[in-house]
Length: 149
Image 1 (cartoon, rainbow, N blue to C red):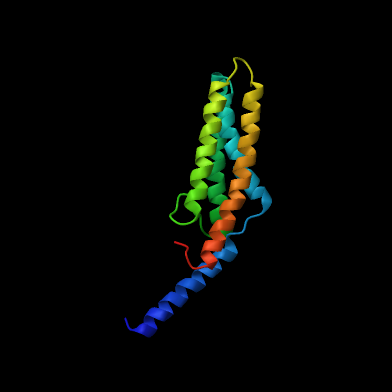
Image 2 (spheres, helix red, strand yellow):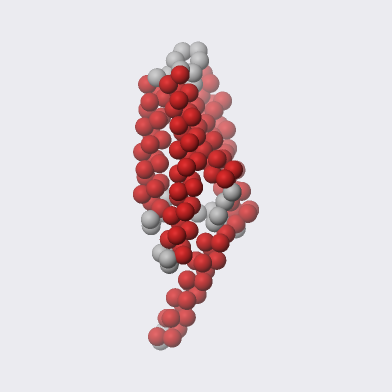
């Protein structure tokens, strides 16, 4: 490969990343859907043990649905656990959600949700939604600057 071929290949990669950045902008409801999935997962832990599956199964189905939605609408699904500037965003969200899971488990009440559990569920929704929007912004910025992988 000579210098011109290398430049052409790099230009092709930059064009592909720019095109990908255009397809990776999701509406607010899509971010909120990730918030719902996060809230359902925390609800599975916060609920009395006999209701675990009532919340856990829809949370996992929601993940499957989101992956399929992304692939159907954009032609791709970008995993949140990719190397790059988005990884710290994903790790912070994971740490916060794990903290909420442990909090929800410790404050679980018999027979009904505790007020602390309801707070953890609400916080999970907000964190999932906000971090989805932040992750998208960081990812698109990374693509536009030529750092997407």
